[in-house]
Image (cartoon, rainbow, N blue to C red; front, side, top):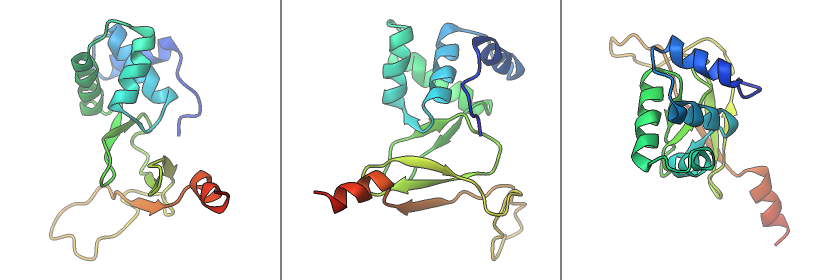
Amino acid sequence: MPSAVPSPGELEAKLRQADLRITRPRLAVLGTVYEHPHADTHAIIDRVRVQLADVSHQAVYDVLAALTETGLLRRIQPSGSVARYEARVGDNHHHVVCRSCGAVADVDCAVGAAPCLDASDDHGYVIDEAEVTYWGTCPSCLANQQHP
């Protein structure tokens, strides 16, 4: 799990390793997703525009698509929710979602090794990943329910 936002040089290196051209929008979007894991597209656009006031919605959508396609970002979309993005990729983790406010948090896989769950019938597939979404109520919403 990334504990810190990579430096601008580290973000540039990540783009180079993915064979992507280094552009200001790509750096801004990638840095924003590191700073705000599980942010939705509109929140990312708002935060990127603090750095690049003239960036278009379409440019951010295109950057998110490119970063997701190359594996630098992961797109998640819990049922009934908009798409969200995270920079924590390739480590076989899952998510817990609050039914009340929609907050999302990472949950490490209990087993650790991908796919961390065994299908009862793989139908001949070679399964390399399992995606689990836990649903519940976050601590903030629980506290608000107890203290109206």
